[in-house]
Length: 240
Image (tube, rainbow, N blue to C red; front, side, top):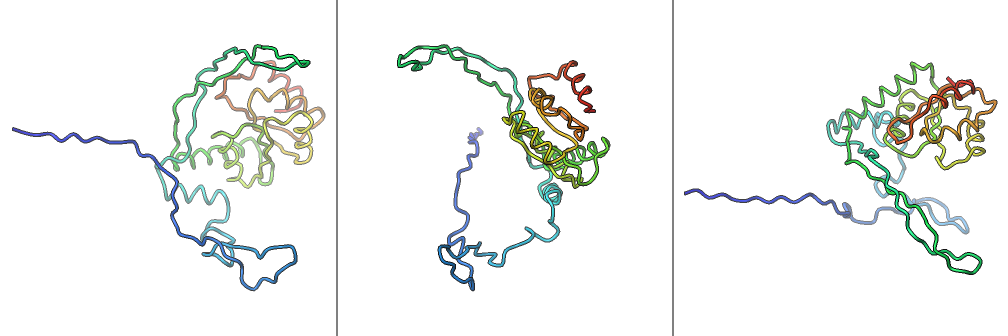
């Protein structure tokens, strides 16, 4: 006669907890009191401040490479894809000219896939690939890359890919209008821009006589496709 033991497992749930005991900061010693100001405070473990988190880490790309070496195949970056948009019309109450009225309002719900992950090694490879792609386009050190999109895995990989080649990034909220984007482009003189396809109209209206934008990189994972007519408009705007 044999017996079996049933083992039940539970999903791991991570809860916030305190890993160290206070005090975490302390007043800096030897700093004279300034009227109307408090004494500066610093981490108790590093009262003299740090210029680098550790030896050999001097750039963001150094952090990516170190993370790849240290964490390898562990999950680094997770993202989801849009499966479908669902729209539902609901009645809402609104006061118009002092009168309460019921109006139709369309609500949009996003059906998303499960998370797909890149390991630290895979993410490092992605960053290097993006950096190589930017170089192949003809961009060089100190050329600026403009990011005009929602924050996403693609946004992050373009940013880190640029940094891997010593190319500064310029960021702009995807809610920025034509004038705001145009101002950003003029001030920074970026040579390349990354955006979502639905923001192309804003870009085209912002360009006008701006000739320093040479490359437009866009995300193809969304639900908006870049049409052939839009590509022709880009060419007319002297963007390659």
